[in-house]
Image (cartoon, rainbow, N blue to C red):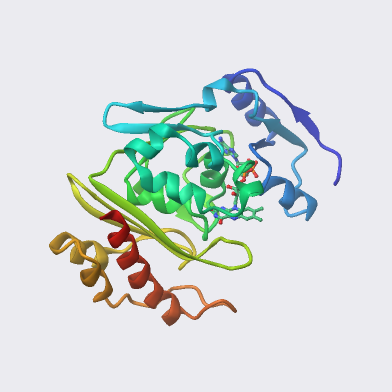
Length: 263
Ligand SMILES: Cc1cc2nc3c(=O)[nH]c(=O)nc-3n(C[C@H](O)[C@H](O)[C@H](O)COP(=O)(O)OP(=O)(O)OC[C@H]3O[C@@H](n4cnc5c(N)ncnc54)[C@H](O)[C@@H]3O)c2cc1C
């Protein structure tokens, strides 16, 4: 590891000012950032530790939504009674991330800022039409994800919390990579007042909504309807784990499983 300066700000305003002044990187659990620094893929001269900021913590019900602080660890969300009561699909998704060690360190804010193409949280945020609250603004899910490891966040912008509207029904199904537990394909399905949303992670360079599945499930919210959709393989990932055609097939299969779990 090369030398860098570590800052421990006491407020979001101080953290944002430090990021703007130094051009450094925010640190949540360090699961992605520290690994990238060790590999010299990231070489920030300044690292701004967010762990002391109480404003980034906490999970609460706020009217028709559940608000989850950015520094909530996956394990906090998996075990939260508020989440389990209002949107059990989020608790189940969190429980399926990595392994126990990963869930006890990784955070929802770090995952969303990182926007790994195979991460689980982006599917929940896009599928539930959540809103990402930053220190500067509120970003709707449809405007937040910009591509592989790219988001709408500015370099000195900090995710404070994520607000998830409570759906009528929702579930997430993932086909995990057996080594990393990241999603080879993960599908989040949500039925709510405005309609059906289906978000897919792992299959392409970034999370995306699958319109043919949304249309089919709006007509009939059944596993059979999901399975009958032939997803277009064009543009999907091809690697040693699976071809585009394999991933396209998995999208329908995972959507059908999610609909079954949603009940
Ligand atoms: C072995 C392993 C297995 C994993 N398996 C899975 C899996 O199955 N599914 C899955 O979804 N993920 C998985 N992960 C990812 C992991 O759970 C973390 O969510 C992810 O690595 C981000 O880590 P972090 O929260 O520690 O953030 P960090 O590594 O600290 O930060 C990541 C990036 O986000 C930025 N950042 C952090 N917090 C904020 C904030 N509040 N505002 C703005 N920017 C911020 C940082 O500057 C950095 O650029 C796995 C990781 C490992 C190491």
